[in-house]
Image (cartoon, rainbow, N blue to C red; front, side, top):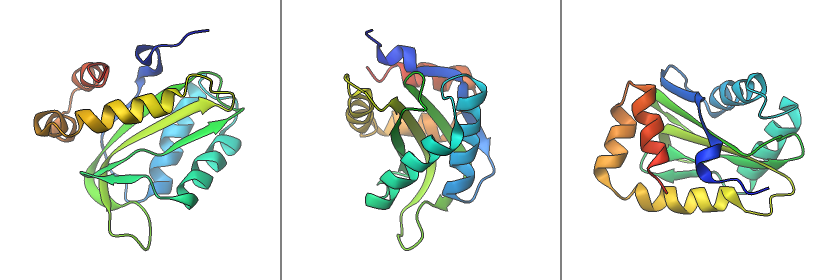
Length: 153
């Protein structure tokens, strides 16, 4: 079954102006929402896949952005969750990188289309645009952020 990037962005997975100060808090909110929206079947295996990936190399990429991601059999359909924090916070202890924007990407373990790599590649290019980045950092409107995320491809 072919899935386009537009199929993985869901308004119910966009959170703006959130008061969080740790990576784990953000991951729990996004993963809880993925479960509630039927995107994953279980929280723990998917969270573990994301944390295992973070243990290899933290996913904070600069520009106040982190792109945690995981492949897991618990993922029922590929998805992208987005969270905008009110304040910058340290993504990984022992590293200096602070983030304000978090894109959580979930893909099934058998991920033939490598949708997470396509999204990360396109997002990284788009984030070089100062105007795009500023809109994501400052927006208080879920519909506007949804449209911005859909403009990535």
